[in-house]
Length: 167
Ligand code: MG
Image (cartoon, rainbow, N blue to C red; front, side):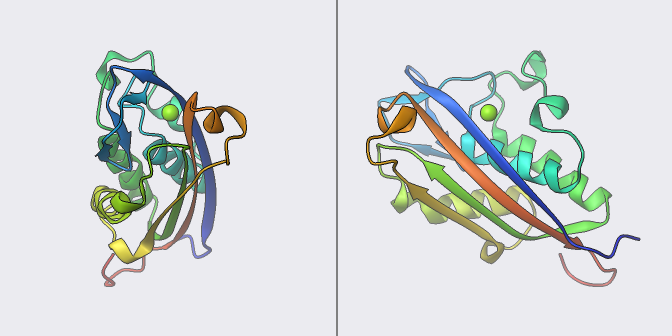
């Protein structure tokens, strides 16, 4: 049995386009434009999923859920996060901490922070107190600053799931 903690980081970015919902952390954010992609293009969930697979040293979101696979077309990224979190359990770990930073010029998403925390914690079957969500702009600089896209980064800490202890 593994006894050491594991850490992983993730990053994702998607283009913002008209006619798509803006999904972030499993929550629909009121917005004139949404993120373009094969799935629902939820960058917060995607960064978190990559952090999980990174901590497990087990590929990445693209190797587990290819964007050429019709099964993942327009899928809720919460479902992908559920599957990634299931890999954590299968490997004998639990999520000690997950922390996501959303990088977006507009709209402001701080009021939806707790809804995102709850949605992602539920998908990972962990307590909401272990899931952090932060948001920042890049003060008008770069592709996020110009409103061309939305990005997110995440870090996850996995610890061994000791038998007899609640997740
Ligand atoms: Mg993505």
